Length: 169
Image (cartoon, rainbow, N blue to C red; front, side, top):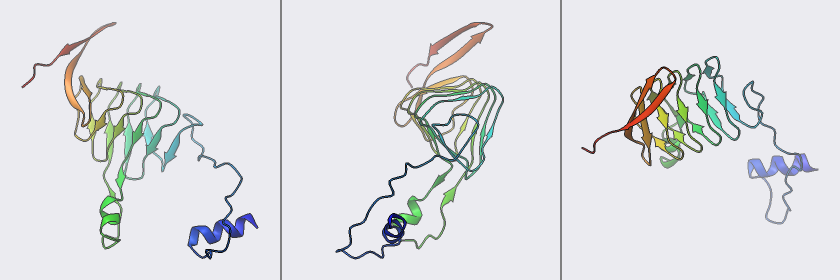
């Protein structure tokens, strides 16, 4: 009974008089080896020692490479596709756009940041919490904001790390 109602709801075949019941079973995320509470699409390449937090969306459908030793904080969304052109064209554009994302080694991406398709983030970069990355990020650069903008350089000298503010241009 539930499966019939769900099938009708998904295909739009139910009538207004029919009560549409939801499937009472909880949705399951596809399994991945990084975090049971993350949603992985396709099979991204993830480097050794990379940590991926809970509630992340890791979209490898357009090609995704994450380097070694990265920290991808909780709530981060990394997208390699967009259905916007297909949607607003009423499906006259028949395909979903894709473009790969490349994240270098030892990159920190803060909580709830969004990385859009086609972006490259250089090694040792820092993406601030809540940032929306729409352009490439050079290595050893801190970006923050919406859209993400460079605000500091990462300086690593052995076990010492500091951030040097960039001058406003």
